Image (cartoon, rainbow, N blue to C red; front, side, top):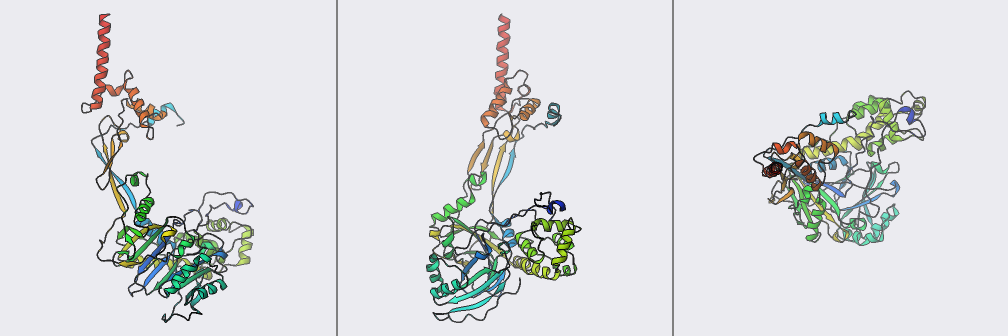
Length: 556
């Protein structure tokens, strides 16, 4: 993507306020019960793209557009090998797929033997402290490339929040001139890449935001074309990218998908740090890809399309709800999320009074706090409320894209998730992909290690010797084990005082335990388990000291 592409940051969605605070110059936040409360943001970590193989032989490409900046400066250009139809999608598809397929490193715990029961210290502490899809642009057959001095505009119109143009040109300079004349600033550094795609006879999808739309309404773009070997046009991305930019590609098909012109590699999973948090999966993949020359993908997941639920019920019945408060309450009860897209739609259809925070205004209407306020009532009467227009915008912008994405998922037989990281100097070739019946159908995204806890009566579970065994069989000792020699009451004193608790350095835990072991009357030494070698040695030492003391007194 070109220089105007940036990482999208969703607008912070604030908490609601009471009506009186809403109508003041400096509102005070209170507990939220409205739409705009959860502050959930989309994944902003890199490029995300989904490919859906359709029964008619076409492939649908869904590209998540991540942008931050003024709406009037947004421009986005994507080369594509075959002429597409254009529609808009939903970020919910990427959120749902990521939630089910992101690699996870989990630890299963096995307990061997029986540890000492940890006393409940509540009574002890109490004694000490009583305070205790819409219609897209359709196209005719592609035909031949246009003459060198012309730009063939295959489609121009509005699709969702976008002003869309689908172009084809026989000369890169002519294409640049058309784009510049139509408000797309093309940097000099993009020249060679445009030349490359023009020479390959690619089409270009150019997007701008419509004049009345804000960046918060940007949606994924959906392109469907006859191209059974999809690719990611990464060469243009290197004009404005970051080092080791992560790229995640999802493929909904009838079988597993692999790179055609890139290598397949496996990150080093024989790394304890992936389970202990010392190593990031991102870094493990980057090392593996760099070792392959920067042109490689890893498989994060392959298998059945996971069960996800992002579809929505029809909202045609809301055309009869003529008051904004009840309308918003119906939206909330039907699962609409208070995100930037909904906010943009509400701003166009139900603008707040001048000087009022929009999110707080809609929360206030949703909760019914403002419906009797004279100023708000006067404002609503002045601007009017058209439920039909709002239903149309909600259906086109939210309901239809989510239902289309749900249909893709429900109809899919197999999902592959591929992942890589790339820097600008590695973005010299567009990765292409193909279906492969030779590869194993399944590749789990869940990697399980086993934590073995070796219990005996001198250890609490959290102080017992512990080792971690990776799937490969490689083993690491996580904790040598620290026995506790005091009584239950003494343990409660040490735990409550902060001297013997999880998170303390091992050396300090041993010091506290040893001090309890030599304290006269220490209960633990008098009831040492015969199966415990550590306790046995401590008990003999204590008895020997007592005998020596008795002999000296007798001889005296």
